[in-house]
Every structure is written in structure tokens, then in C-alpha cells.
Length: 44
Image 1 (tube, rainbow, N blue to C red):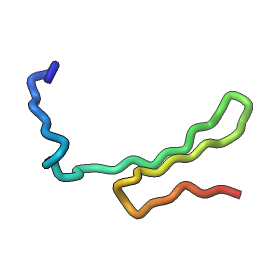
Image 2 (image 1 turned 30 degrees about the horizontal axis):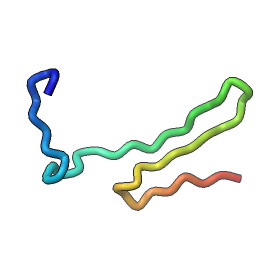
Image 3 (image 1 turned 90 degrees about the vertical axis):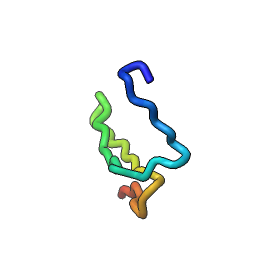
Image 4 (image 1 turned 90 degrees about the horizontal axis):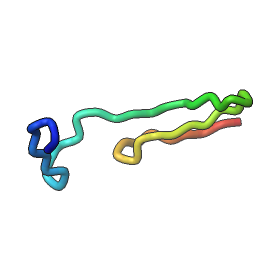
């Protein structure tokens, strides 16, 4: 509400999803997938 938007997360539809890969300072990769979709984070 700090920017004037009243958001009801219980009834709000999903308007976007995020999947990401984070490159750590040591070069290792860390992945994450939005649980609201059918995406998964996987590696080898």
C-alpha cells in the first residue's frame, strides 16, 4: 500500500512468473523457478 496500490494477493490473478539463474562470485550457478507455473530448476 506504500505506493497507493491495494493488492489482495488472495484473489489477484498471476500476471507474471520469474525464472532466474544467479552466477555466484566463485562462478557456480544457482537456479530458481516460480512455483506458480510448471517450471523447474534443474542442472548438471
